[in-house]
Amino acid sequence: MSLHLRQDRKGAHFAGRWGARFAGQVDMLHGSLLDKILLFALPLAASTILQQLFNSADVAVVGRFDSRQALAAVGSNGPAINLLVNLFVGVSLGTNVVIAHYIGQNERQKIRDAVHTSISLALISGFFLLAWGLVMARPLLRLMDTPEDVMELSVLYLRIYFLGMPFIMLFNFGSAILRSRGDSQRPLWCLAVSGVINVILNLILVIVFRLSVAGVGIATVIANAVSASMVIRFLMTADDPFRFYPRQLLKSENREHALRMLRIGIPTGMQGVVFSISNICIQAAINGFGSAASAGSATALNFEFIAYYIINAFTQAAVTFTSQNYGAGNVERCRRVFRLSLWSGLLITGTVCAAFLFWQHPLLSLYTLDPGVIAFAEVRMFHAVAFVWLCSTYEVSGGALRGMGYSMLPTTLTLLGCCAFRLVWVYGVIWGMNGSFALLMDTYPITWTITGTATLIAYFRIRRRAFALFDKEKEAVSPQP
Image (cartoon, rainbow, N blue to C red):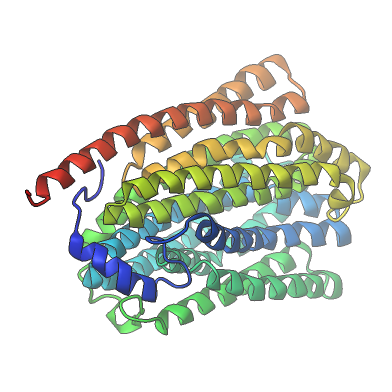
């Protein structure tokens, strides 16, 4: 169901004056769009890539200065970590959409309450994940059929990583608040600082103190604490109504805002959870080829993540720009936001994927010099990483739908197109017919194509109907000549 089809003239006036003043460096409601989308998306892409590089730095350090088993233990934990993290990061997207709508509609008090509601949700989700991860680390890794020679190292790393979940959630929810007002640059500063800290601590704890996977886990927790502290500090010194007051954390009337955030964010989060479940099944199939395959897949996956996070940045741009403009009644501008975000994501990600393939040998050697590991990594590079740009078709169109308030439909299409088909592929083709590692990797471009086609069709149909309703309601409230 769409959110707020009402054209609010007072809100539009507010968005033009107050919104431009306090929306950071990007005024989403007026003027040119392409430069502003790039100004918003590129720092966001850089910040999410830096966040991923926390894990990549862990993989690289243990891969070069420890053992193959340590590399597999750290690198193969990604699907397990993402299983629950994605649920609550999806809720943080609801924060982005709700606050952006309030900006477009002159709801200053609701913005204040929504900010504090977001921080409350971050703390609740962070401590829940911490407790869950400590208890469920070993059962989850056994579900993934983790090789026995890396099991104990994997459990140790995963439990240490989950100790930092409150910091990860605070950073993601705090960053969503900043992005809702057009500020995607300060989260980048936070991650740049914490990323440097992470790499330095990795080298010290692994090379000097010989702590192996425990060292890289501790370094990541400390780095996440630094980035979360910086984001909270930015919010505590922000302009009203975006300022965060710790003493008001439990005082704001926040049930309405929490429900709206959850209504938009939970379908997105569930999409991420089911994605992670399907990836856990794929990881189990990868583990069946041995620790070299597990390590090689984890190595190539770092580059796949980087390409995907570029797409995600333009998806977030589509969500935030669409949310503000849809709330303010600028439906034509919403159309342009979608078009520019989609083509920017396709072109930039396609270029990056081509660069990864061209320089794959020196890039892979940053993580490992083991020829067996590199051989499996190259297979994933050619069969999956080369086609990540296809994700733009369903991610950006789904993001635009969520910016309009339609969250369940893109989630359903993605779950059917990607997750369900992948499970069929793993159980029917790989395990049922003893398929090869390359055939296992082929599931990615196939599912990306199916899902992208379905979501694009759904977007154009929903947009036509939603914008027609918007225009009719606007005509109904327009003064008669």
